[in-house]
Image 1: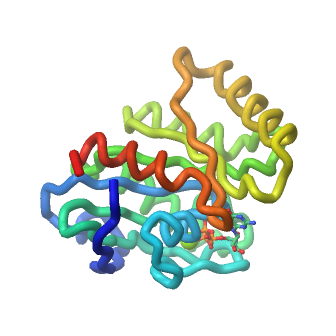
Image 2 (image 1 turned 30 degrees about the vertical axis):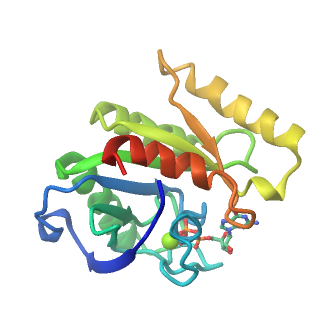
Length: 198
Ligand code: GTP
Ligand code: MG
């Protein structure tokens, strides 16, 4: 799929205020600082579209982008960031639970996993389990692959999938990405294109 146009629509503090349109919707979610906003900028080819920050917790609302005047791309706040206040943590975890429980327009979620981390994070495993309970269809994206060599990358991905296989009967599809080198861009966009037929 080619991205011909990208438009920021709005940021929402809760699911009730999100657009009512029945469009295909693809959400990007993962631990804080995993590279969600960077990946969105890389996919859309627009550098400053989603705010990237070295300080985790930058994205705090549900951000809607309209792609090709046809489907929504959603940038969600990260989970598992311990350094924000308890009130803020509660707000964010409620926001995510609300979105994944109630957003019927959600077509597919991309759960981003930091490929440099091994052993696999318990926070990621718990989040995936909660998505499973809500029957949300998802694909994994192992981010920041440029930061490690191929051998380590394979080892880390393998460790993650092995950990997942303890709880899951079938393992999800996954992509490898680097926002630096645009790795995974075509694969992810083609995957989305299978739904949108674009
Ligand atoms: P929050 O919105 O704060 O939860 O973070 P986020 O998941 O949106 O992460 P963001 O895209 O803001 O990136 C966090 C940091 O990781 C930034 O310093 C990015 O430059 C860096 N980063 C993101 N993706 C990559 C990547 O593919 N490779 C490398 N080397 N760095 C990356
Ligand atoms: Mg972000």
